Structures are given as structure tokens and as C-alpha cells.
Length: 282
Image (cartoon, rainbow, N blue to C red):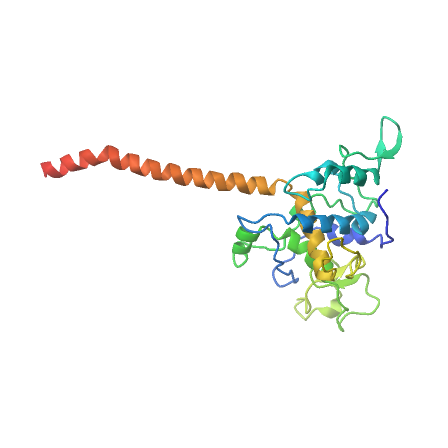
């Protein structure tokens, strides 16, 4: 059964709140993910580290109900050996309607749903959130790096900071520079009502602090690395076929390029005699 850690029930609110932050309202860091760009791909070891963060921290509240456990063995994903996937599944309890009881999961089962009613499912979170906005300015970022859902998640996880001096000490929530959809005290607004500090107050307590886990591969466990690892894993859960899509797209571009060249040469060959005859007549 997955280990459950004691987290604030308000963990749900941090990533669940709707509404996209406008430019300047929040600070979203542009993390350098390996899967970005037309030729990028998932880092297998990073996905495994992200799975560990999810298992030991995030799964206390959040589920992955759209992800089949057996896909952890897929190439292009975490690519765990089959025996490790089976052992991992056995640690998870799922409800079996036929038995009307809980049982140990198998690779054919999906991850459990969120353990708290307020906690959003994280299966598609990296596609549901955007870190880069607008057709201008950041449009190129969207073109080459995607919508920035992974950056948004990682930025929220690293965006906790001490509340600014303008905020009352008893204001509800936790100040986060990357989250713009939460509460905001009037004392931190200027006369026209503009926010004087980035971000807003988020309902969930800080889930990661750095050194929260011990990676088997000896990778750094500082806060930025942990946040980036789990964000990459959630990008994979949201779009596990990304590499296949990129391969298909690249193949399509190559085929269209070859077809265009062939059509040009064919057209040139077919019309060349007619052009020469026209010139002789002139």
C-alpha cells in the first residue's frame, strides 16, 4: 500500500483552482525540460525520480486515476522492469467492485483516485495548466516549449516565500509567487487596485522543501530538482505518447518535404518542352 504522508487537506486547492495568471501577475520559471522542442524526449531517470516523489509525497492526497500502472514499463516513459512494476502495483490497494472489497493492485489496474475530496487528480494536470500565455511575446515559448504546464507545476512547488510586509499576519493561506488564482489582501493593492507583489495566497501548505526523498541514482534532492522531477513525471502522465506524436510529426514533415521536391521536379520536367517550344515560336 502506498505510504501516506500527513499533508494539509488544502493541498488540493493549490493546483485545483481555475483561472490562468496573466503576464506579470505571477512568476513562472522557464525550466529546461528534456522533452521540450521538436526533438526533445523524456528523461527516463527523471521520470523514475518523479514517480518516487509522487509515490512518497503527492499520493498522500492526489490520485492518478487515468493512468494504468502497467504503463510504468512503457518505453519512452519510466520504463521500469516488469517485475518492478508488479511489485509496485502490489503496494497499492484498489477497490474491486466484483469482490466489494479492496485488493492488491495489478499492472492492469489504474492508480487510485485522490484520497481527499478536495484534492484534484493529477493525471492531466500538466495539460490543464499553462505557464506560458498569449499569442504575443510568449507565443514562441508555446511553439517550442509547449504550453508550460510542467513549468507551472514546478514553479508553484518552488514558489513559496515569506509573505510580503504589506500582508496582514492573519491572512488565510500561504504566499506563493507563481500562483495567481488565490486570495489577495487589499493592503497589497495600490489605489487603482493593481497587485503590488506577484502571485497570491494559496490554500495548500508547502509540500516539498528539498531533501524530502533519497534518490537511488544519487541525484541532487534540492527543492528545484525535486519539483522539476515530479513536474516532468506529471507531464508524462498527461501526455504519455508525446514521443510517438513527435516522431509521427517529424515523419510527416519529411514526407511532405520529399513530396514537394518530387512535385516540383515533375512539374518542371512536364512543362520544360512546352516552355522551350514557346520560346522558339517567339
